[in-house]
Length: 130
Image 1 (spheres, rainbow, N blue to C red):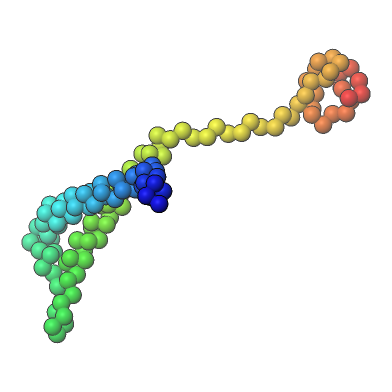
Image 2 (cartoon, rainbow, N blue to C red; image 1 turned 30 degrees about the vertical axis):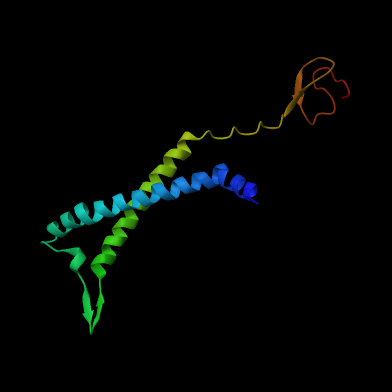
């Protein structure tokens, strides 16, 4: 059982997935810092000094933090755009499959070696029966 588990873990797909999850988590922290510490303060400054992290509606004792929601939406949009551009770049690097060769539309007459339509039953040049 240990050998089967080790073989499963050492397969390329599992390791690639683990690396992707770790890098994705680190990338998410970078984007969150970019949004929270750089973009949202600049957007708030442009909108007249609004602090998005403090925006909330109070309904009784409940607090609806829509400012935090806006920051999360901006996080998502930046991550989605980054993934889009990465996938687009990878797709451009991959070779496109060559198109299948087209079916021939002509053949050669075995008697006079002229090019004739593939559906011909008699050669128009030498009048031989094909």
